[in-house]
Image 1 (cartoon, rainbow, N blue to C red):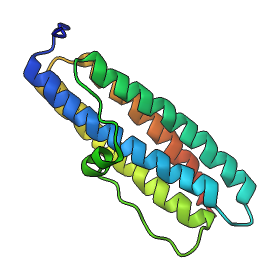
Image 2 (image 1 turned 180 degrees about the vertical axis):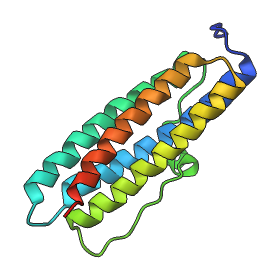
Image 3 (image 1 turned 90 degrees about the vertical axis):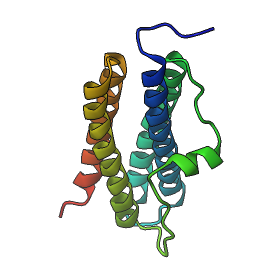
Image 4 (image 1 turned 45 degrees about the vertical axis):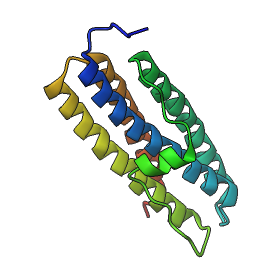
Length: 158
């Protein structure tokens, strides 16, 4: 059955495509955050182990809500590692040390990259269509990443 919610078919396709990229970024970042949670080795292990756990739990919630937004505008959400790797802008880093500073810097960079991408999408969506629901939705996601980035950034202050 066709989704009739006041968004043109062309716009919903373009929006779903961008949301799929965001979903891929979130999924890759979530796995990278779990890697940090599982493999951190440092004097501040426990504190950062808990920080990373809190962050991947937030990301899990975002991932589910993004997939559900894609479905609510009438499209299927990508759900394979192959799709996520094809769609993401993030990369994986090989690391020699599993230290907190290295993990935090890498995750902070990914959050900031996602924030810039979300801002660009908000601007693009507001100029090209009338899907104010998605604009509001990704604005909330951006605010969540801003807060998560702040937490990570605070750990790098001397």
